[in-house]
Image (cartoon, rainbow, N blue to C red):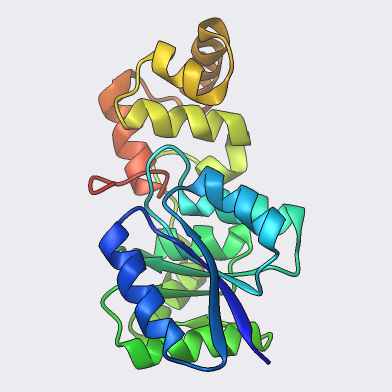
Length: 217
């Protein structure tokens, strides 16, 4: 069986490298690629790949949110998270969104290919170097200073929060989301009220901690 893969990463060189490496295997076909979460959602709906290799940290719509939407649209499309971040929170959020695996970008190519094949066959794969931290966090729990964005904020509120953290003005966010400035500001007030956070600095720190955005997007 040929594994049909959609590549999603906002770094062109990363996509080029992954495409070349994966295409060397007769059982893997790269059927599409893109640089942002919104396009990934659209392409996954149109191409219906077997697996989406999803970068977690992307501007405007992150890989966690994109994974959630892809899986809600078609549960048969499986997702493998790929990230520079090994923080257990990022991994847990990806898995909660519906991903079947997670590997760091620094992993060996053999491991990446092993993960792709395992997930395409219906399995789950988490890189051994981060699996123990994820299990430990799940066992002991990890209460933070504010509730998880994925439990208290709506999908639109998470989008607005990500854009705020990435320095977008209300006008820019409104154009990006095709909503009014007034609606953006209403969402922001709701976010502040729900999280008990104040000011852009606090919201940005929270968004980074929750995996909504990162300093390197």
